Amino acid sequence: MLKNIWKQLMNRKRKNLWIALELLLVFCLLWYIVDYFFLLNYNRSIRSYRDMKHTYKLELAEYTANQTEYSEQEDTPDAAIANLRRIVQRLREHPDVESVALAIEASSFPGRDINTGVKYRNREDNSRVADIQFIRFVPEEDYFQVFRHISGDGKTAVSMNNYDWNDPENILITRMMEKQLFPGQSAIGKMIEVHENRFYPDLRKEYKVIGILDDIKRFDYLRPYSVMFIPERINEINYHSVTIGFRTNGKTPASRFIPAFKKEMNSRLQLGNYYLEDILYFPKIEKDTEYEYGMTNEIRMRTAMMIFFLVNMTLCLLGTFWYRVNARKEEVGIRRALGADTVSIRRLFIQEGLLLLLLVMVPAMIIEVQFVFMGMTNTLMADIPSYGNYLPDHTFLRFLLTNLITWLILAVMVILAVWYPARSASRITPVDALRDE
Image 1 (tube, one colour):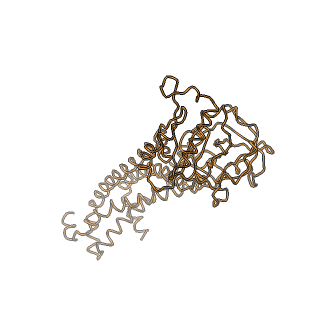
Image 2 (cartoon, one colour; image 1 turned 90 degrees about the vertical axis):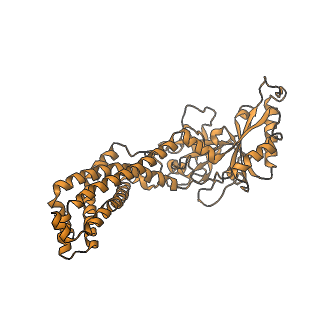
Image 3 (tube, rainbow, N blue to C red; image 1 turned 60 degrees about the vertical axis):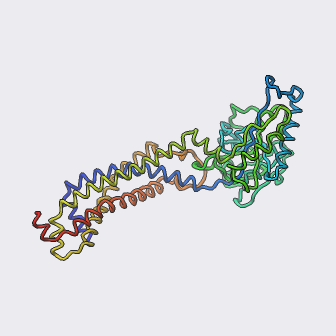
């Protein structure tokens, strides 16, 4: 059967050449889009071992000297820190609040800009260097309970009480950072030292790892990254940077909880020069940040482009194969006269289209290899070393899978484009076909 189909293609090789060139162009363009969405969905499938559902950020503001509510007596470090603690206590007393987290700077909470640009290394092996992102949390509250962090075994939920925070050198790191700095061994009890730090002089030169947390992702479309969690007490230097987050019991959806909370707690949280400015939902913060970085628009644009591309490709292939099938009515008539039924004729045309697509796949893959070598597929930070066993890092396997997916999508398009004209042509009677000829 394949030999017969091959002869049919060769007998019309000049006409089939134009169809093959069209399929070649379509295959390469579609593959590029498929590769992007393959990587996007793969990254989304990687689990982030923290949970932002039912978590909120408390936005506090301070009255200034030109406002009537301002109190000069409350504008001292001791008074401000005492008021912050009272605000946290009142927040904890709210019936819907389960746990509270304190961090130094909003960048230590999920969904926003992150603290980065710092490199630490294994003190025993200076060649092991990690470009890390760090979270500065206040150990007086349970940061890990609020965001449901999981230990390095991927199963056990952790709490602030699981660790000793009396020594300011004690830190936690993620499993990804452990793989970077201490490959093949446990990092617990090991020391890390600064390798490069140009932006955060207040960070210590050395830290001791006392625990491992499982990997987390900054955004859903990215992979996990190396993070270290640094405890920092509130003091007269950093109290202006303290940020408050909390988790609720989830009984009330965010759309109703936020306005109700503002109405109820607005006066209760007005202490000293502090007042409640807003309540933000962490999942929404993450979505807003993705939009600000242009990721939301990029995904929308590529999705719209893929839909537009597939629709136009189907119409184009439909017109091409319609002409191709109708030009062979005499052949259909002869086949009908020799006893071929409509099903076998439709199957013949479909198999010809699929074989042609299969032949096109080879030169298309040769062209696509050039895209790979030029780095055009290094999207979504896929080119950044992650020290994880991720499928997209196996370039050859990823290349084969994305080409297979592309071929299957185009195969469906070809079948749809061939089926209707082949169906119409197969219904012609031998007499009509010969009369037309």
